[in-house]
Length: 273
Image 1 (tube, rainbow, N blue to C red):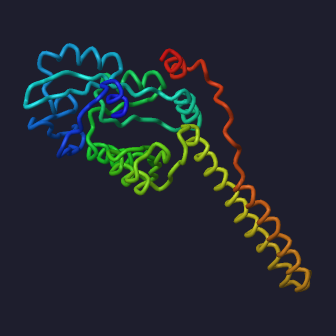
Image 2: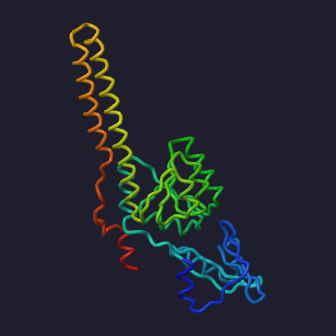
Image 3: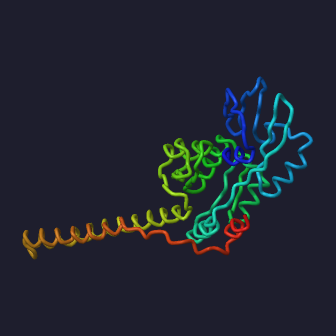
């Protein structure tokens, strides 16, 4: 985001004493002047309030720039939805998951983006501690997974039953805090990982069931003298081979193919851009 703003601005002198204010913005100094860059609410939009509202209604986040307490302008920043986003949300719904968006963006922007991909619930204007609090509330109702990629997501990732960081896009803090890191930008890795986990669990239960059933059969046969020791050992070892072969299937995954959802709202938006 910063690179895009700097590219549009051209030549810019770097600021000194730059500090990040969590869930608010940045402060710094340049040429003896104090600069602030951040969200409305932290910086008063003043006369630009109508423009800020228009940006937000259009699905953009307004970033205000202030120098020595005087408002200089507003920058519209919009998160572009990935083409596969709507496809992934639909797949999660089919699998029985409920999806909620937790974001620090304003409600208008968040609602616009959520509507385009079919997200069920939106919680906007959140600070990191707010995200963690909502995850705690959700955990009291259902097992909860949190997917995030930023510093602001770290508390929620640590609070959730399962924290999932989007590795290639995520910060080091998010990746270290999460239980699972998906090393790729394609959101379909999320549904792939969940499906793989369910498949691995099914195979594990199959192996446990097979082993217990075999023991339940072999012990009485051995005690009654129907099978000798050598036969029992041979059958047991053969079953172990079957269990191992079945377990190997858990390591197999289907590679992702090219997206086939060009007509989704998210894909259409990306094409328009």
